[in-house]
Image (cartoon, rainbow, N blue to C red; front, side, top):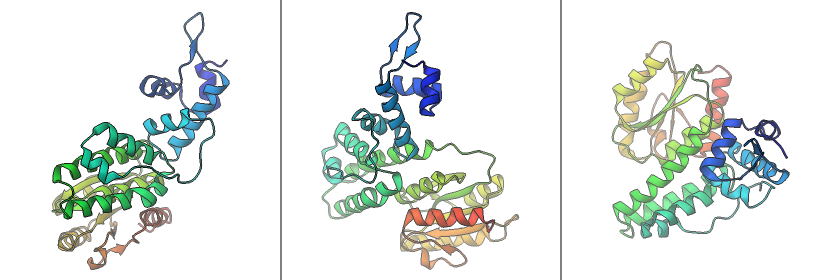
Length: 283
């Protein structure tokens, strides 16, 4: 049997985090000594190691707890996800939708989930809304759950606030943020201090944020034709900032933006390009 201090040493998880996992997710239930201290057995240590490995790979803690309880060996690679996001959205059943999203996010590293499940399902969701198969309420219901799941991955990465940041967001009028937030999460998982500005951000707010935080760079998402002019205004307004910063553009319509470095459609690869540029001192 191991004390909480020994369990922390064996798993690499801080004692406070072990206690939080026990309280929030009931991933393990240690016994208690006569003095009331937690005692973990070998099987529980194995479960905690598995959960730690999954969390390190970007799996939300709530999903990692469920998956770790299935066995001590952390699966590798992307596992098949049963269930359809459109059907779950149509149901307006919170438990059903949350269960599907948690299973999906537990199926592999975030970057694999993103391209194998998340983006294809989001595309289907959009198609279903455009065709009238889903109502606005049903589409928003599903999108909100996905944003919460992505946020848990984003927030799970500890970054020094002292590192010069990179701003990521959408221009004024652009509101479909699952893709750009997913990119921001990939970038943060590479160790970059990302300030995620979100959707529908006016030009002046980009300039103010970049100046206030002395940003090293910014990435603007350009997904619709209507976004190009606003994205161009952001690029132009930030071109003369001092110190200078590098501007990247990504998304289906990013080729229409001048004076910005265009990122590839593969978000994980785009994040690696930005991270390598920053590491090389180019930004």
